[in-house]
Image (cartoon, rainbow, N blue to C red; front, top):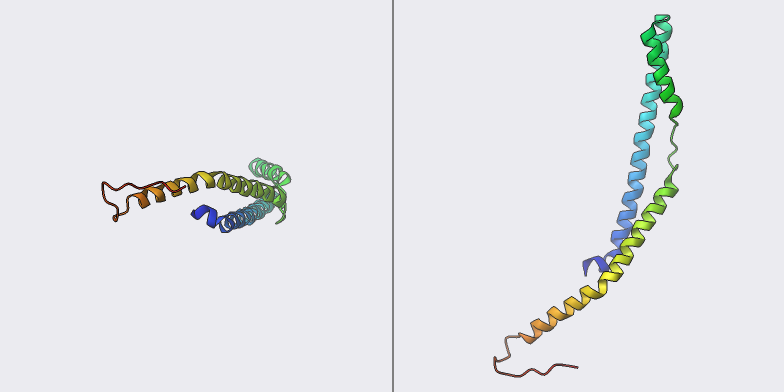
Length: 132
């Protein structure tokens, strides 16, 4: 059975993929934070240059509110939750594979038994005694 024979490789691949997605997401969040900070700095300059232009003040206040809610994400923030999630997924897949192993092996043995009984060397009228 492919899944049971390669269970270690499949689970380690799933785990590595989860960790890669974590760092890709962190990279995206850091880039978003840097873009938000750059937009906030541009809005501050625009508000200073325009004097008291109401549109520039509104843009500045909206960006200030978003910037204050945002935080610069560290690379390893939340990795514990993702490790726990990946561990739970791998455990669930391992248990499912172990529970499904017995019925799949039984079906494989039954199909092998019917193939052996229908071997070309047997005559149509010959009797085959079951092996016990």
